[in-house]
Amino acid sequence: MALKTSPILDQFGRPIQREILTEEIAGPRVGSVRSPISGYPADGLNPIRLANILRAADAYDPLRFFELAEQIEERDLHYAGVLGTRKRQVSQLDVTVDPADDTADAKAHAAWVEGVLKRDTLQDELFDMLDAIGKGISITEILWDTSEGDWAVKKLAWRDPRWFRFDRNDGETPLLLGDYNADGVGTVPITSSGETPLAPFKFITTVIRAKSGLPIRSGLSRLVAWAWMFKAFTQRDWTIFSQTFGQPVRVGKYPAGTTQGDKDTLFTAVANIAGDCAAIIPATMEIEFIESKNVGPGSDLYQKRCDWLDQQVSKAVLGQTATTDAIAGGHAVGQEHRQVQEDIERADAKALSAILNRDLVRPGIDLQFGAQKAYPRLRIGRSEDTDVRLTVESATKLVPMGLKVKKTYFNELLGIPVPEDGEELLTAPAQAPSFGGFGGFDGDPPRAAPSLNAALRMQEVHDPVAALADQAERLCGAGADAIINEIRTVVERSTSLHQIQEELRKLKPGIAERNLAGLMRMARVVANLTGRAQIPDA
Image (cartoon, rainbow, N blue to C red):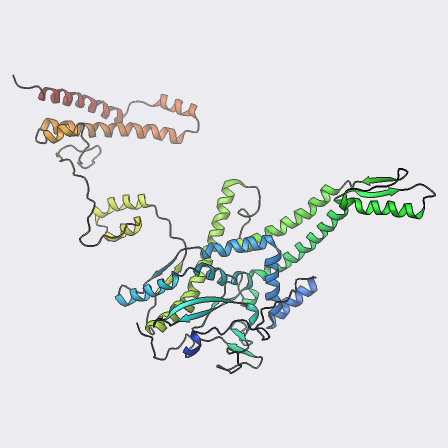
């Protein structure tokens, strides 16, 4: 389809700028306000500095907060692990597209979106968008491609959140630092503080909140920052403790009258023996190793504190601890916690789906096909588990009662494509002829039964005795099934093998046994008649 030339407005009524849609306008530039070089506010962090960083972020200066969030993710292995797990869970989910309706145009729109999703880099791009889980917001620049005459997505480029600020009027509208053009020529109005509004149809703004509030205050990094700082203090103290008490204290002793040179020799030996584990001293000197008695309990205290802080981080990121921390509770607790993690996964997937529908699907359809009344819907998530067997059995019983089901429904349910016209089809095997008058018990409708001797049945399909033999097998089978069901009930309600034995002894012949006995007698008669029928006439 040819490129559209009619004016297109975004959701805020702003006209798009076609000349910049295919250009990279928000990338880093050395020497500009969007520098790739980052600061390190976590170095020497203390409660006062952390509080000042958070207050500055609230006052529209989030630079050091974004740098701190990056450092926390780099330095805390546990936080990086659980946060990466949460992001990868969603980025690896299936992505499907639903047409707006059943018209040919709607299906063509959905096919265009599906073409965008087939790119090999999509999973990594979704992972980068989910950086908003930690930082509260993530900005992705769309690089459009029109080289083949149609609109297509060339790249979804993650942009460092340090290059963005928030509108001072609402605290949540992102603004790009500096201008779009490297030569400084303005393309859109720039704010008094040197920021530029995001161009329509050019950016995907991902906001995923850990709590309600402005984006800068709703990311997990803000919640985790205090726990990380206290854990860093504990790790530092633990390191000092281990260095001080983790190995015995060396004490060198020298006799009275020792020369200064001998003292220096002894001190050098004592100082080096921990690292080198070897030293030489005169025979008249002595080195004593003094071990601390509370090394174990003291070290456990630091470990417990670090583990406890890690568990709090796990709760904040994944909503539970069983899938990340070794805690007691067994399989049942693990399953319950896994369900909590899946709830968070679904929430993230739905939030990201809505964002992509707003910032990628609709702009792409408008550029390629023009503005529409309805747009295809992109969905991220696991396919709902369906009990296929229960569905088939239910349809088998309910369709004769009037339930209406599309023929293609079960093709979709089983993953079997609908055959095209003229294709060779599988067919059901030939059914044995049914002879009326032989139903089951308790009002079961008459039904065809398996044959005792297929060859005989084929030869004697018109022989009523052979037909009776076929029906006898089914009738006896029903009585046997009734007895088996009675025994199964006993087994299911019993809790031990001894109880099963006692319950079986208490069973008395009932209707099932009487029915089976009568059927066995009937079977004997049928067998007798069948045998007589096979005797050739003299």
